[in-house]
Image (cartoon, rainbow, N blue to C red; front, side):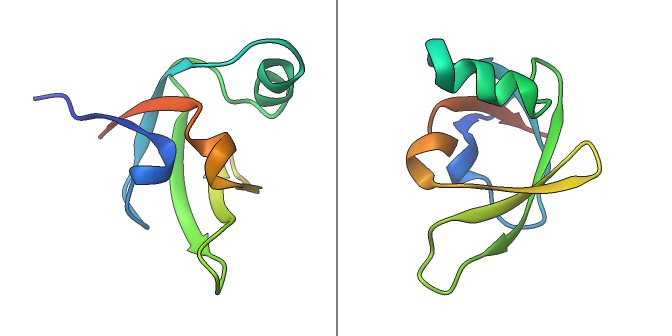
Amino acid sequence: MEKRKVLSNIEIGNLGKVLDINCEGDDRRRFLDLGVVKGTKIKPVLISPLGDPRAYEIRGSIIAFRKEDADKIEVFEV
């Protein structure tokens, strides 16, 4: 069974696969430039001491997203 979630709800160490990016314009372009496209595997790896932002492993790189940005990325938990 597929568990659809937003990226910010994936637990540390679990793997998510991108289903959709729910934004337009500059935000969407930034995600695409960072390699966040449909089918990309993303793994949360670190949380800052205050809980926001979180760091994610994407295509071999570690990239930090604030919760408000991670909420725009729809994934399913693998």
